[in-house]
Length: 297
Ligand SMILES: [Mg+2]
Image (cartoon, rainbow, N blue to C red; front, side, top):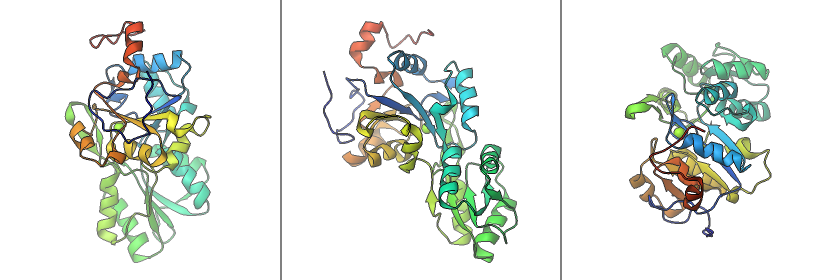
């Protein structure tokens, strides 16, 4: 049985699961593959089965607090060894954006070490002197403080020389037990509030450039690709903008009610109670899968 609906236009319900396999899958990580330090149900056997079928799998995160090597370490620790080239995040895409648009700019990154390290490696000048800063980078920074906000304020508002960009638009990062951690949106809001300026560019999903970072090395059409992520405003919106199919597991931030409240063009193609529904039901039977069992291969 094949699914012939155009991307992102069909109404989604909890029972609207894929009946075919696609040519490539792009997975968000936080809230989709794992929550904290636990893989979510079905994640391991899903990824293992896609790889067994030689279907390309890519990982794409908005979270700039780790670089791809650290994500590879984390996935390996959780039992999903993954080549670092199959992982992209906003550390990679932010540095790429700067080197292609403003290679000679001096930046101040309100950021954790992985992004600052990657900027240094790419030869981007960094400074804490507001008189020298051309671009402020807001990001998910758990050491964000008044001193950093003052530097941004002085560079943008007092010296009137800097503008600011952000790594990602997420309000919070989902944690186990329904908890979370304030994310980049809080830093963007702080800078906008005191300077009266608006963030010029937000690099992460739903920015369509993230798709290129994820599948640029694959010869696949976006409409034969599924973006799998727990967040409507980032993962699912990026798919809608780029013509990808999308699947939203209900294991992270967004809910079925929120998905159904959107215009049909913005809804996920599929809403999944568990991520391994991406393997069609007919194949579940062949594989002997059940809902209670997520066997470790
Ligand atoms: Mg997520």
